[in-house]
Amino acid sequence: MRDSDDAESSRPAPEHPHDAIVDPTRWPADLYASGRRPTNVQLRAGWSYVASMDDTTLLQPYDVAVLRNVVVAQDAGRMALLGLRHNNGFPTWRTGRRGSGPGEFQLGAILWASDTSILYSDVRLRRLTEWSDEGKLIASRELPKIGMIWGVCRLPDGNNYVMVRPHGADNFTGIARLPDNADSLLDRQPFPIKRAVHRSGLDAQMRLYQLADGSCALGASNESYLAVFHRVDSMVSVPLIEHVPPPVVEESKDSKAIRIGFAEGTLSAVRGVSSLGDMVAILYGGRTTARRRIVDLYHRAPWRYEGSFVMQGTVRSLSSRDSTLVVVSEDSTGFDRIDQFIVKLPGDQCCLQ
Image 1 (tube, rainbow, N blue to C red):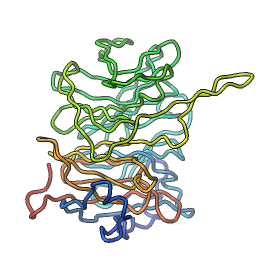
Image 2: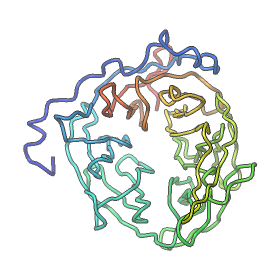
Image 3: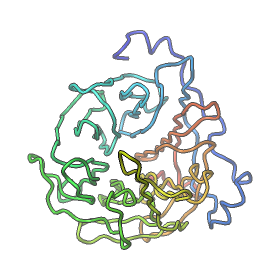
Image 4: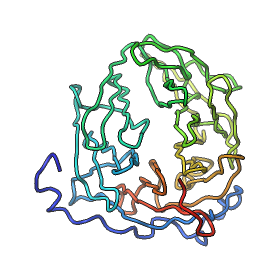
């Protein structure tokens, strides 16, 4: 790897997956009660990468993006990006470290990926950076006048839209168009939430995702639907398999500040979205902590629920490209793991595109 010439040769090859997915016969009964059923989509295990005390190559995988020739993992423990070989998960490069200088990170996530690059948003530094599939910095853009960016989507017309939460002087919560050469937001649109929203925006947390057909999807942390659009002024809400009640935000005062948070028992909903060709995979929260291990699959057009699979541990994130699906989840050891799967349609049809 770039950080150490002999790190790759001294590290054992990643293990194969070991029972990463729960057998449907061992699902908790309440998952069936929620209306879920096992998916008919075939998931063939590929490689696994499990963090451990003895291996510091990847301390805490948090986010992941599948590119054409490499899998890029965000290491939240080291504040770095790690490139893993597509065919076996072997680490080939690492870039970045904790800091505020060029190519350094503080707090953020991978928001968008093409065949050959990723876009990383650092909400603390108010910076967008693009990285190549070889770990090289392509571009960096400071956005000090804009709120926290938690999603990027490029529509077929070439316009880039971002999902923004309040920060500093900018109290806007919603989606807007981000011009290529201006530190400003255009065509601002509020989130498609019909209920009243708390002034903090805490109960209007959404993330913007790119779907394989070129459309964008808004996934809400506390809503039971996905808002999909090809044009920002024509969103369509599609239902999810399980309903969660509206979130409740509470305020408490002390001598120095007002504390704002969710009421006890508030349930989470959408936590992640990824395209699987003409299908969409969604990480869900729902009514129990066990549901944070679920991945629900939906047909894109017409929209309908297909089925689910359940991981052994809490799912952190997932990403896919062509027939490859990569999932970050909690391992039984207490560390996090990365599992790669090859996805096939029922009836042994052609791999998902």
